[in-house]
Figure 1: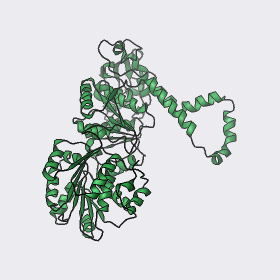
Figure 2: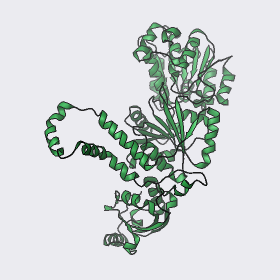
Figure 3: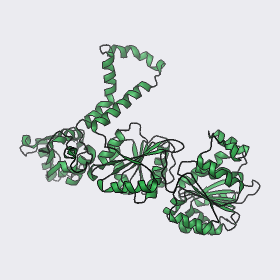
Figure 4: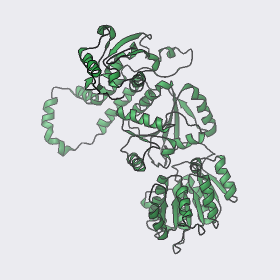
Length: 565
């Protein structure tokens, strides 16, 4: 196995990467570093995100800097503020035992005057986003005529974000450059155009074919009806205890809605989208990087520059329009030599899109059935048992309490104790999923399809129900259907006619879901009242005394409004 020292890297830089725990180079590093160290050849390096690209260009770039020259000798362009900061920090870490190279990161969202002062103090390497660098050049704060090497990191992402004009402007200004090193996960026509316009006989180095998916990533997809996508998402998450996932949505509105719903449902999650202020964006990303956030729901644009090496799953809450975008999404997992899973939740009409992605990326997709409620409970139970088995015990701290604990539990057998400890968390999942329906979509003629939304337990008979909530509580028919569908996994086909009154409502519901909805609604309260669900026949179409009071109170001018669902 090749060692870094065999690539021609100087000893002081070897010390720096050894301190960071790097032992052997990745494939892209083995390909790029020798060429970048020994020649001024233009380089096109095709490699997925998370394969060690920063060290591949960063180490030779540092080694070829002349320490005695104070001017800008190298330029690295990145698509996002986050990636810009990360690359600059990596270069500083690599060179911690080498010369005191002056590395300055410049990007939007931070004070430009402070960045100008840093550059004037002496910057040998500038790491920049194209927009901010162009601003600095317009202000005459940066000169690029002394730049010898230019690195375009994640070139496809920069072009996707609309930086073509800025890149043209910057490359034209770096007129005395000796070489361009272009790094990209995919090779669309726009990247080819950059190479044709600015690079001379570039050497193309690739760890795989163009747009080919990372082989360390497993690709899975589930098929369900559009109304069941959120329920399917919850099952996928619950069936993978310990999941650490990035969930991609197509729009910022969808990302906000899904994140809000998941937070309400008790998941450790948050959203990352374009409406967030930079401070809030930084806070969310930092929580996710540190592992204090289990699920991050994001749009493609917002997630650019997010570099987290140990993401276990990427979940596509719907497929992107561009195949290159899918490659970038899935590349967020399976990084730094790890394996990962890319999951897509699709409706039947998008199955052909899966086939197209397979053909273009050479990835193999596996279609799996959406986990049943019992399968989810099974996975959660085994995770609970595993957590108990591996739980660290602070013997000295707990010992003073053991006498009382033993006394309290003395009448329980070992088997009974195990059942009760495991049931503390297991009961919550069992209560929710006990009567959960099968939400898979089956081919026509498959007998399972007739049972798909009834769990195979009933024949689609409707039950008329009464609930003590109405218009004065801020409830609408649309919100109520969304509540049943998203929170309790009830497909819209199982919800019948809804009669919404001022202080109460009647609605028809497939009998298979009555217990699930009854139990779920009992945990809600509105205007200080617990929600009750009864058979409509038992209520004789009349509200309770309490409900009549609220109705009269509102008619007399009461303005109290209930929460929206």
